[in-house]
Amino acid sequence: MTDRSMLRVLNGERVDPPPVWIMRQAGRYLPEYRQLRAQAKDFMSFCYSPALATEAVLQPLRRFDLDAAILFSDILVIPDALGHKVWFVEGEGPRLEPLLDQATWSIGAADHVVTRLAPVYETVQRIRAALPDQITLIGFAGGPWTVATYMIQGEGGEKDRCRRAAYERPADVDSLLSVLVEATAQHLAAQVAAGADCLQIFESWSEGLPEPLFERVILNPTRALVDRLRALGVTVPVIGFPRGAGALLGRYARETGVNALGVDTQTPAAFARAQAPDGMPLQGNLDPQLLICGGPALEAGARHVIESFRGSPHIFNLGHGITPQTPPEHLAALVNVIKGR
Image (cartoon, rainbow, N blue to C red; front, side, top):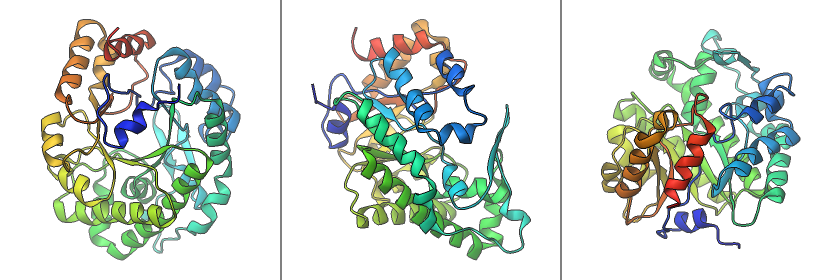
């Protein structure tokens, strides 16, 4: 069997039952992942180990009847490749040396990124070689603004400092976004060359931006990124996931050049369908908390998502990443509901 249902949907076809994959499907909710993670000295070393990263990708596919695999990596490999030290604090998340602490921002050169990230592309090659033909392989990167916010403030959390920087240091922020567009385009193109069938851009921090700022730091850089990918010869479908875009979701869908739209948990399917161009494939948007609950609540929520997107090209997913508290058997039950078993 070589029928990749997810790629059919990304090409505009309605497939029933809808293909399914889960954001962060390789991760801490699986006991075998936690054992694997213990073999690396730190998280970035894990990301740069082709053997470990490939195994992480394959683990959920052994358990669940999923239609896609996604590269195991992190959006912060880009700043790391640009020469900005990245480390992870247990229980708190990533840390970088904040650009806000520097009077003059030293960003690094985009042309070194692909060389530095060679282990990631080896991982893509290994995954594609290990996957059955019918499983779609997704490459990914963080959106320019999302990655920029980590670099600007040195951590996640509240983004007020980043928004102020966009107003107070506009030339610095725009220059950073420009470098990230080029670095990310090169990174994604290399993933496709290594075997990725499609791409996802995680613009996880789209929320809370007034429209002029959203246009400047989300729409314009994403459009430039997609245009650059096409100029580099990349023809595979691109899924954009602007989490928290809210009322500006339609502008993102219409103006950035992405082929498909990830829909977050808070966004009604009817709103996303009305805002996106006619026939654009949509992906989402089950509440991850339902996967923790399981049982009748999970089944009802899954059926609601399926019905809400019925009649249009749809890829079943969560509206955000699966949480570490999720019992694996609940994901197995969800897949059975989606597949009509």
